[in-house]
Image 1 (cartoon, rainbow, N blue to C red):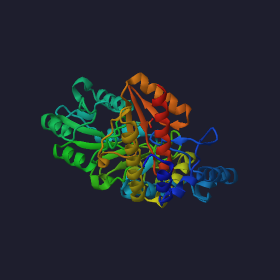
Image 2: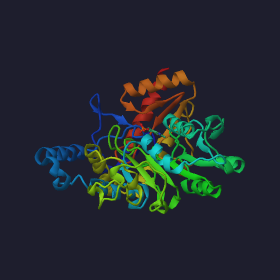
Image 3: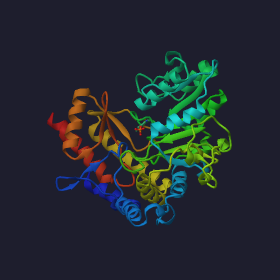
Image 4: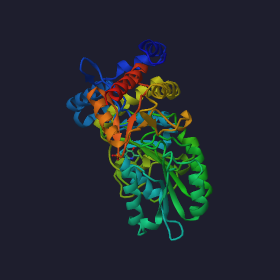
Length: 422
Ligand SMILES: *Cc1c(COP(=O)(O)O)cnc(C)c1O
């Protein structure tokens, strides 16, 4: 019953967000659209991006340096338009967020302020199998401060059976090591398994043990309705080219909790972090602007910010609560189809509990890694776009802004075709 065009079409017709798909360019395959389930890796292009970029090109052409004040969206305060939209998307206050740099850069800049190891407390806790860039970043931070990662990098292992991190694993770790942990850097959603975490519970726990707590929200921003302010995290960072659809290598986001807005923290400074009202007096002494904007170094890349503005306006219009409602239904539908039609072919690594995941399902082929690779190739050749994560995971992520229930059906049909042919 659920495995039928009628059923999927009916769900699509009842979808109040269905029209948002028309706001995106959907890449083509053969005579139709790709089944693009890869928003976890690179979100699709909003059609409005071309217009907003063209506007900036036109303003640069016509106005030169005057564009800083007289462009349609003046470049000088450009970041403030982004700030409010970005804050809304991640559940933060405007003073807490800024769009700048890229994700790994932001992690480093924020660790300059929030990883302050000393002889008693020098350790960083991350999850085992963390995204490589995060691991490289924390390891190099530990070395930079003259400590040894072999002692000071604590990696919390996943359960070997499920591949997931048990909810009490962090607590047991802190009970043992909490006194020497300076920083917990935790994912909002684990990139390989799709496991989502309760950010507030983690921040509370870390703070109880006297640690700083930061989140990498690469796979959570634009995917889950975050309450970053209420979580109490010290800081967070995320990229914007995944669920936030802001384009390849897009400018990233950073969050610093309001309680640090006025604090004098160790920080690397640049002129764009200087108070706006006196920045152009060009004085020798740095006076930081309060909040996350104080972490800015350089004047921002307008051509990188314009696509983000276009994209965040779409998020604003659709609203994260509505997007989450559709996302829950989409992923549940994909999961139900897989269970019913492909139970003996695929296993999902992602938690069954919808509260512990976003869009993404991470799938393993029961027949093993080689079969998994084959299936992945088959999907890509058939125009069903997911991605492969070593050693053996296919990630499929139906995203509520541009995916349809019929995309889930099409993907499952394509996998069945492959399973029946081998
Ligand atoms: C995608 C991703 C990155 C990528 O880092 P960039 O600095 O944007 O290249 C880093 N960490 C995590 C957890 C990611 O998912």
